[in-house]
Image 1 (tube, rainbow, N blue to C red):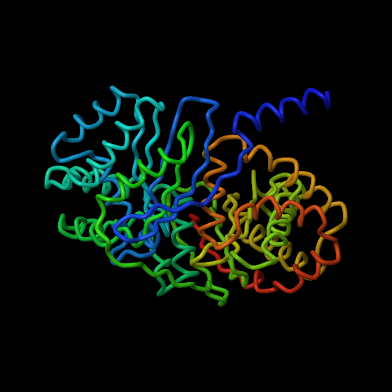
Image 2 (image 1 turned 30 degrees about the horizontal axis):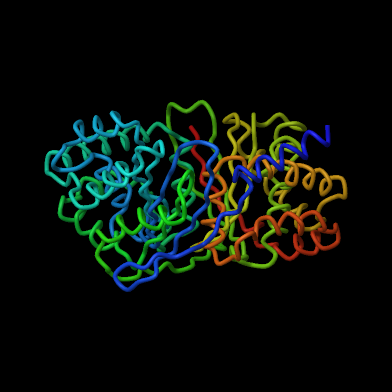
Length: 430
């Protein structure tokens, strides 16, 4: 069996599957633009992401405008129209999509290698001639308002949005990234055009590309797209700590049959901190690991208060926090809330057991290869290494750090982070 695995690994290495992604650059208008690239010729396909930093939902002046702009850009070009542009893409089996995250704004294309030049051309067309018409704008506004109306009965969404607004009040993070009825109703077409003009610029861009493309092809196609962009100005992303006051908001809904409990706390660790890997292990044991995690064991297995209970640490460039959630019977809401507090308090006071650490290591080290199977997974990992300021290959080194992590070091780390006891709750109940 070992010999078979050895030859498979050799074959995959020759084919390019295990070749690491690299950070290059491409010069456009006197600017050196970062290019994250990996060749993988196993299949005759290619993909590219054009990612704009400091251009996502947390940079918007009106709640929801980044997501709204992405939807507008998914309407194709003004020349071809929404339906016509979609038919052109479909005829070549080309995927083209636009999405907005909290910090970034992303264009993505993928296709067979033989159609990739066409895919690049379609993306250039979209950047040069977006379907920013009043008709398209009215359509997206109607759809977005309808979606927000539906969210009024999505109690998980309501609880999670209210939690974020409590934890990050008066910061760019403390608003609903989908927008709300009032903000979306007030959008104008000019605001959408201005948002795109300000953020879709060379000074904010990173290109991530790979597949059956040579390095020269990757650079040439990237340059073709980037040359259509104005230089613009760099964007800024601040860092915001979560509220350390223990707040609670109860949202009452007559038709709910369950209590939706969302909770969160500050977490004083930056994404590029050297102890990042310890946080990953601690988070897994406390609540991110599903069955076997402390929250799941105490809330569901021992007490039967919920079908699932989850908690995890979130580390980004703009904020760090600990958040979790569960659903329970209306009459069990207070008990479940108390159990969550007690579990986290005991976790920070006593740390974890040797058995818990070993189980976490087995899962994290054993599952990591599955997260590197596809080209998109590897490129995504390479992007985040670059974006967060790590050297390439950091996540691989992180596994070695996890493997060698001692129980004493982990428990010292856990006991330092007592801030996660400062819990804020947003609860939807009857």
